[in-house]
Length: 144
Length: 117
Image (cartoon, rainbow over all chains, first blue to last red; front, side, top):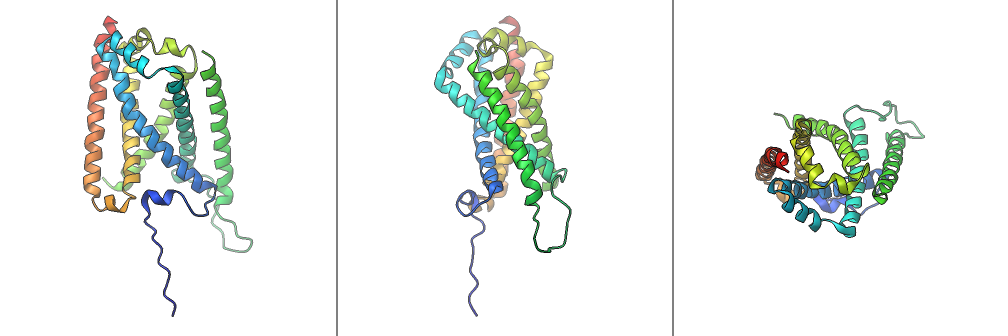
């Protein structure tokens, strides 16, 4: 008898990319990547904003250090990451907590219908909302 | 408390953050004059407001919990770290609580300084 193929299914972070992944898998990958970026920013943000405790000079100096067009662009990227993470996270809460868009259980009769057939419209809808919010934020960023 | 309870709190924190962070981004970064919003005068006026103090405290608690629980989920999927899950959790709890204490100290210290500035 042929030896069964052994797959390493505990890849950790290495399992985030590679392979033939569908749209939802990319959504998962982006969700984790943006999550990591946001949590690192949160730690930085706590220290940067607490500069106000040390008076106006310290505050202005800190704001000067993280100002300028480069930081402004990075800030926009951060808003993009938060927007994506927020709208995709809302979708995950709808599915995992409220059980929305999972579809009714049915017998596996051809043509097969997976829960993805129900979930994908929710993903696309959320991404449209996220895109609209990003267009709105770009307008907010470009106008002083 | 069971792991699933902590996970459920993580979902609740996520939902609350959607609202708090949405408010924060729209009103500080997008609407109005951003330069004016981050001037010391404007920051100080928010720092002395009790309503903003409650807002920032809730923001701090939910963001740190959601962020560090999410970070823990990612770290514990790495097999080498999963073997030491108690240590990983303990380090993240200490870091999270440390940041909470620092953030809360800054919040209350700024309430006094903000009144001067």
